[in-house]
Image 1: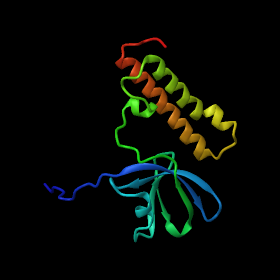
Image 2 (image 1 turned 180 degrees about the vertical axis):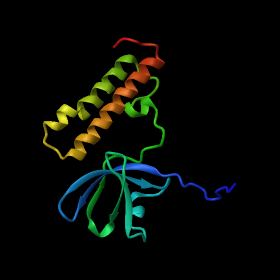
Image 3 (image 1 turned 90 degrees about the vertical axis):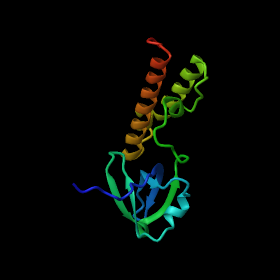
Length: 149
């Protein structure tokens, strides 16, 4: 009966390392409008910023409690394909795909991250990144008709 005339704004999620005034560090995703600099979003007139934690829950943080905020990656594009996840081109050889996969897994494997005694947020994020790399590699193998490794 009622239709919404409000246009939903598209946002890009960017991973950030946030240091709060209590000394804690968190890895969270910040939402930024397309073609907007992260610094412009941080320095806008809002008093609070929404972030997404490793569990996918939204947290609202007062800007006055943020001591430092550092982008951990470039501005990601929504709906990245498996080749983008592994950082390779679609024309990459099977050997290049496997090497990119191994590199991604070595950097984010949960066992390696846990051995560094990092905060739980870092471990959960690494687990998600490793799962993304696994899924991307499986999708590429399926696209190329490769059932075996």
